Image (cartoon, rainbow, N blue to C red; front, top):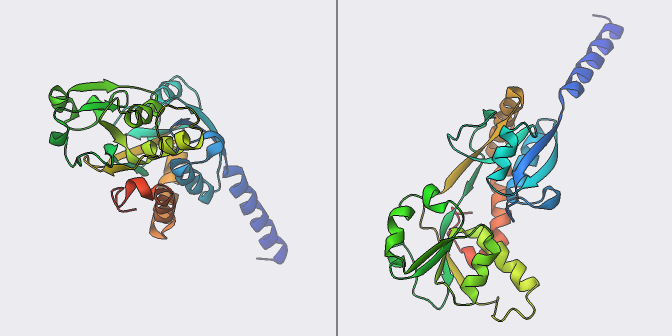
Length: 256
């Protein structure tokens, strides 16, 4: 093979690689600190890092949790995030790439909660649909003094700090982020947003996949996620984000 032929072959190979790189419109769930405006957040960083490793770029469109699935199924976007394992979608499912750690959060001065049984006689608030998603929660709610599912998770923190409920059921990192936002913007709240709170992981971690409209993108994601897991990149992202909320999470967030 001549030098000219070699150079031409290399040039064509590089052009083919560049043509394979896509900008992928990802429909994400607006769940601070997992995904936030501008593509920041723990989950967003895992997705972006994985796809960029494969040569792709990401454009974000965030929508309320659960609505983002409906938008994708209706034809919006190239991929959708935070899909429960086994949930049917319009796309090709990836491997599980992120775990959420649901549990019970409560004021530090209260009696600790280490199981659902400890919530008997207490007032509880959680996210919309939790009784259908979290194992055994639906069966336990009759033992609570009150039980509410509220979509706006900022309200969960407000209710706890104001003493209107005893416990919050949900992801510990999401809860801690809303606490941080309250403390940063909490003038004239009528309660102290800096009260000590604790989180106990009373549920098994919930695993989520992505769904891609193009099966080749799903294959790329799986391959590059495996590489990023092997070299420690994914672990480093998870630990970095858990460290931001260590005062609430302690060692309860899957060991991160």
